[in-house]
Amino acid sequence: MSSVPQHPQLVLEVTTIDTVLKESFPPQVQSTVYGTVPSTGWLQPHLAPYTYVQAPTNGIFEFDFVAFPAQSGAAKVITPIRATLVWPQGALGIRVYASTNAQESLLDSGNVSRAETRAFSADQ
Image (cartoon, rainbow, N blue to C red; front, side, top):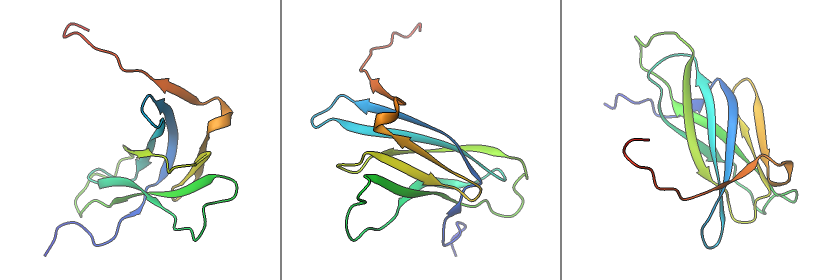
């Protein structure tokens, strides 16, 4: 018997979405979504995409921010969690849902920064 529950559940809250335009060919947009869960021990956080017959006409793709809940005995304390997503081809934005809220990241809202490749020395 597995110690991980069968189905992931929505996280408690989406707190922030950091979005960058990665220098690649073709360019890719990547978001790191930060949120909270109601206890320690949540596993495998990820963004579960909504299924569309046709791409959304407004270009905003929707995702549920989910993870596998902690097993019994986990400390009941609000705990940070995060997941990363490369946007679907042609997306103009993403909307991410949690159990208590939702947040968006849109290309035209000025919240997208350029990801730069930078070397770091060991003493930085």
